[in-house]
Image (tube, rainbow, N blue to C red; front, side, top):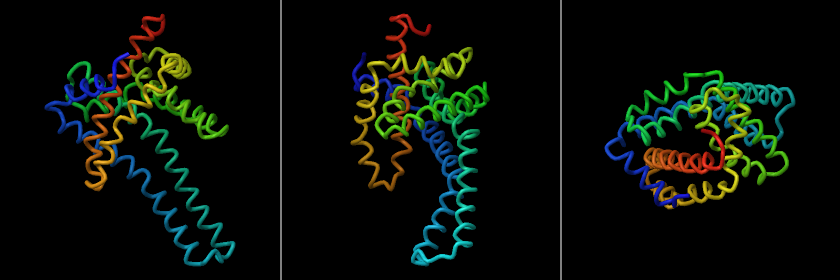
Length: 235
């Protein structure tokens, strides 16, 4: 396995001269996520504000009405996550892999193309992965986090191997990450300094940090995949 420095150097080499489109893709992706989340957050904020103003002494009918509204918007956000954000995440992640491997700098366009190609397969794969992570989280938080790292390569496998079922893609991610979950955690942790530096920019710096992390993660995927293939895994 390579070192974190190697993944980061691979990412910086791929992003050199391509930061503009990388940042544009990130802005588009994050804007879609926040627009989808916005109505739910707004209604939840209104509900919390009403509860605070009433000192908890809100009448039952009004409480049920407001809770129903919040629940309805939460359900809408859940549907948007499944059918819009999840496949778009697959496109976003793999667009940086295309940049890394092929030098394909059309990141915003590729994000859309990858998200819509084999759309239902990606929707189902990401939904199933989320369900598995959620079920493991019910046992306690830590098992859920471990499984999230175990299944982290699923978006790449769904795109690279569309012939696999969603379950098979998840199983291959789990097998691929065996012994490498901490390696990915350590890679994420190595960006913490950059994350802290984004705070004074009011978060604007994250539009540069996210492409850096995603491209480094794509390099990590290629590394663990090569190790997996040597040991008889996916080819």
